[in-house]
Image 1 (cartoon, helix red, strand yellow):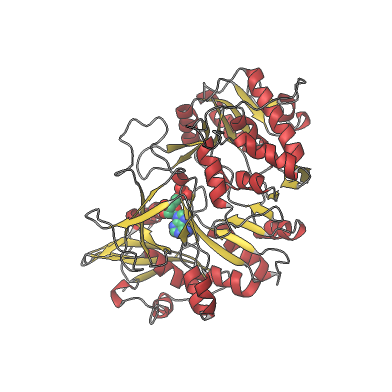
Image 2 (cartoon, helix red, strand yellow):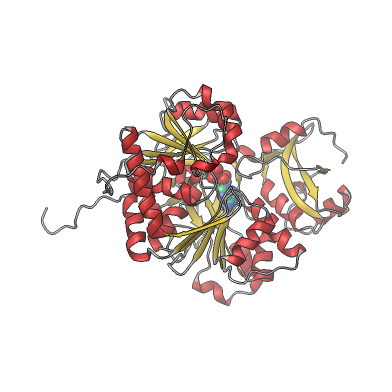
Length: 542
Ligand code: AMP
């Protein structure tokens, strides 16, 4: 039809082209496995990404073939993000914290042909390589002098040698924007992990959504620290959003302890950081213990699990850092909502504003949200009616990679397995997960609220609430608590702390158990299933 717009495909290679041309001198700083800090620019990153693409051509990889990574957040990983996807192959980020058997299963399921790994993960690669027959090339993410000797891995080559081949410069291919670009597996509630396959179109659209002012609000002036791993939903899309706006990127490599992160934030004048609550708690504990400050940090996205209100308050009130509480899923690329205030909230007292910021926030344009009751009917946006949360949009999975089962969609909507309510202003609040609610006497109890209250007690370092079988009530909530070093607390004292905390009596936990550690999953989230298993023989003391 005449008079319409150009039909240009949305491709990941255009992001790196843009960064090179418009913000080519902006820095990318990475802490390496070797321990030093590596610095270069978007322009150098773009050049090296094209060399990666040439190496893939030289290897004879077909369009759509998978190249896997077992890698920390760093510049070489970033080059693979662009080189692999830009060249029409699929970047498959593997989670190195999974068990070797699970990694093997995933590599075989994905038919990965090349696997690039940080030398840290050599023992894992040694454990899996004979069981991964589809992998033709193992690449160590280092230079030739750091390739582990006697690794036992046939044909092991250093990344620098692998991509060093001389040759002409490279022009990114153009193809359909619906072409697959990257792959990330997520754990199933039962059975094997499930692969989520992103496309060029979904990735670029997601980046447009993420950088919006009411979302991550990124600009070329920012110095951005993605602590969330690049193997977990593409570090929440920050490598792509970063190229789109041309900001400085700072990668922490393997050093994720509070001291290292704080040092990096200060030395690289980080203005924006993103991570899960467990890692941020370590950062806050460190900063508190040394009486430290954040000189440049202004915003942080906290997501992947609910941000405890005590953490929000510590960032906001002690450190003057705006918390952007975010919610999303691997299946959603991952951004669904981020919490930021509207103009009308400016006049509210501080406490009320903070209370709003505790919510998961408002949907990004591009993601439609709704909550439905047990009958599947839409629930009103009244800030009270909680039900299953469903989502729809161009960066949300339709199906799982190579799945033979029925797709997950319900009338075109993706069921999140989260339970939430939405208020009149569109603020979403996750109240629990459908798989993780506690049902007592036929009524639901939110484990998240119970945890938040425990976390607000000064003696509590970490808390996890689970439902435990109860002879009378079916299930009752028990809170497992890790005390802060040197702190003392009795179960009775903590249970008393629950009084006058906006919980009905029957919603308060019945018991407290002190544990040395809460089991955490590969991405730092609490493993409630493991905890339930640990506490299954719990004897009621109350
Ligand atoms: P994943 O696919 O591993 O990123 O996990 C997604 C799930 O993590 C969501 O379905 C939620 O259950 C949970 N989640 C993510 N962000 C939040 C948040 N801000 N608050 C509560 N739960 C969250």
